[in-house]
Image (cartoon, rainbow, N blue to C red):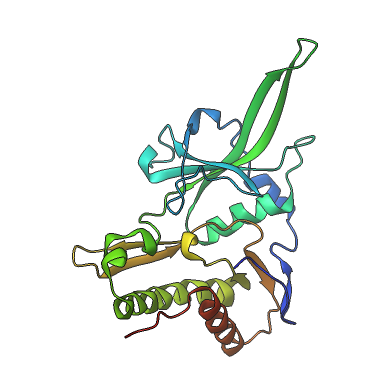
Length: 239
């Protein structure tokens, strides 16, 4: 369910521009190497979290800004910086995390190696420290694993209601469409009875965000959400 700019009201991948103010605010915290503990693994397949646009998502080794290490994660983006030029995709992720209330700070991961002539060379990538989204994908919870199809359909519907509120707020308030709400990008927290307490979006990176025309009506966005959700989260057949 990656982002696709097919609807006429979709302008393109977000952000459409980065301002000088954005450049002065983000990626100004210098070398973040000391915050990198270990590469986290996916809840879905237990493989290290890496992707086309990220070079790794790490547990934090240290506290930052009043947050404990266990409340933070550090994401290193794939782009190798040339003349310290950070691309719009990296700015977009940091900016979106701030809108979502998850942004903490951003800087760089600095990699040093010795070349074949014995000289030390340094390269760097953008890195973002963000708040950890608690929970796990619903399909990995014990409640889901034990549930029949009717219960699973109810769980999905409850999650859908929570996620729709978050998505519509982002779309209507900031004209940004979150378009990557698959199993792995939604974390849930259940109570001891298996009832949904919280469902939150995570991973605000490229290409999951789309800039939308400011005249796009709420009804159009709701219709699109319903269609995309049905495609990615189909109902289970009930006996």
